[in-house]
Image (cartoon, rainbow, N blue to C red):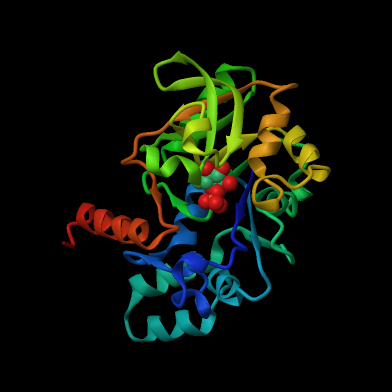
Length: 270
Ligand code: G1P
């Protein structure tokens, strides 16, 4: 399975920090956000991880490149654990494609169309899942339904609903919904449920084909949500309701701070 991580956004919610540092490189405790996500994809059996980046975000590529000189320096000083951590980051199987225009999340995913032809997963660069436990659950649900599409959803408070893709559907077993439709960033009064898609998608090759010709939607951007809604007329999709303690949205300053605090607490640091 291939994994796609869209990471080309400008990080405007974190300016001025993100003027020079890509938001995917911000630390959560001791690792950049993006490294958690790459490791999660690999833990879920992805054999290739394609990061959709922007040519300005050179720091991302530097992080995943080998650095023999740094490793040698650290080893010479007896800092073997740090040398191993640097070596590990440089050995992760990450490749890069570029989104040269900010045309939306659907467009970013389509920039990695090299994965077309097989089931693939999309992991949004904002969301981290430190326990790596959501994609395996989604794969179980997909396998139980003949390889259906599966997305992760989170129950949301009212005020957050207009920030997410919201699903309509019926619960088929505890925590699993069969999706009938999905709408990007509806007004609260138009939202069909309180379940918002939350950064993890397990998708069929048909979704990639649909993205190739999809017109712009909400915000005048090519929306992944619109491709998901379109594929519903041909294929099944299930929504896996995740536990809020399993995933963190690090895409806002309060979310990023909360992720740092919670993971530092779990590590016994605070
Ligand atoms: C994106 C998606 C949206 C999803 C959200 C959180 O929105 O378009 O459907 O619910 O991520 O995973 P963004 O946060 O990029 O505006």
